[in-house]
Image (cartoon, rainbow, N blue to C red; front, side):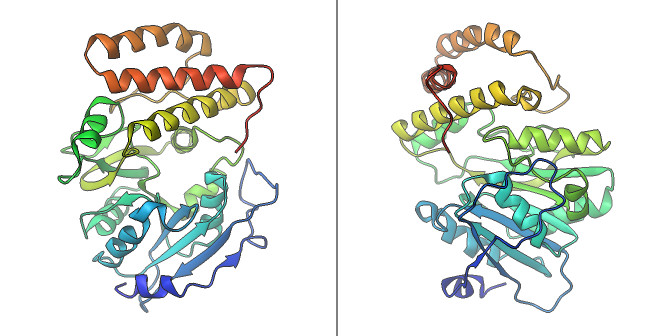
Length: 317
């Protein structure tokens, strides 16, 4: 798909109003300003639909680079579906699911980086070989050219990066920035949750596990998904995350699902009271282990969480 970037530069964006999302279990039907663009450049049968939600189709320069990397993938028979301008990530992805014609569906964030041109083929091969796998993700690693600040953030803060696995591993670290599913199965679980602003990944993984499917991370599949590149942007992100998490806990506590820092089994549902009790210990641990950035991010998250719980506050997208 070498002409992907050229085609994108002359893209005709279409409104999403008439896209059929009847498969979605938890829908948000408020007006959406979103538009979509899809592209498939070869005549091979479509095996894969790549869905990318994006706010502005640029993302500080990350998105054009991602398009170039997609164009260099060695996999044939895939389409790219971009959904732009929808503030609800879950709904944007569901629009892509509704439009998808491929057997498999791969989600990417608009700031994901794919250094390996075999990423698509490796993920699709795992899905072909293992029907029991419902979601397969890659390994988010620190890029070799990352500046010292980004490198430190990705080392200090849980879930920002990890050592690549050496075998197919059950893991909660399969995430939207790079994960593959069967299109028919994401429809079968009711699609993404469009009602919650945060916790989309945990919700979807839990729904696939209810079907008896494995959620895994695949060896040999790497990608880069970087945190904000300045301290103030990083702090703002964690404040927003905390605010949105509190909103979910307040209005949709059934979907406030645990997110462990590593691979393996874990207890999905932990009462809010227990999570609040353990939070000071986690905060102190980050401080006493010398992880100052993690400490500041945790504190910012806590301020955001408390701010949403104030009676005069109401979540705004």
